Length: 287
Image (cartoon, rainbow, N blue to C red; front, side):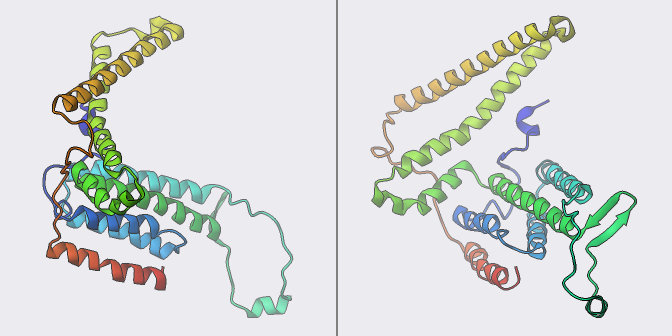
């Protein structure tokens, strides 16, 4: 099994190039922050609308089915399971209370049913339904919007967008370039970590170790040896990267001009950015 291709954790999709790939990273970052902030103190209708909008964006971008299954399929299943578990678990409101209105007023006023559906020991109440929608949609929106951003934005584009937005902090003597260089190296180091884990896993499998005959103590010793080897290999990779930068004369970002990515605003970028105005208008009016 190829761990680097089967593990759907923020991997960048190089091909095919969708319309999301061609957007300016600053525009995508603005929409990402809108998706992260928008669900705060919002009603359930707005939360469900955000989920539908994310699914529509994914479908219109024509992301391949294999990527769609890895990126959104598992997350959808997890959120649906979370929603179902929330519906069948007790809500904690089992206390009896005295109604404030007389009996005749209770018959006149509009009937309010707290229990939405009940079958034997399963009881779905309005509180559990509301809580289930909030939890499932919130987790889906936060995780999938971030994952979709990483899926369609290269590490250099992310760094360029963040450097542009954090540029005013340089007046406060904040080392913006150093921080973003560290972020870029960290993003580039993730595939190396996955590659080392994959190589060690394959080496252990090829040795056909009889785990049942080793026992718990010897198995733990073996895994400690594997972990030590993994740490040693990662430190060696990090040292190789530092040596390569040192050989090329890179001592400090302040002395070397770091060009991450060339930012350009096109008509399509302006249109997508302007759509944030009706988005937030609907959020404050109906959300």
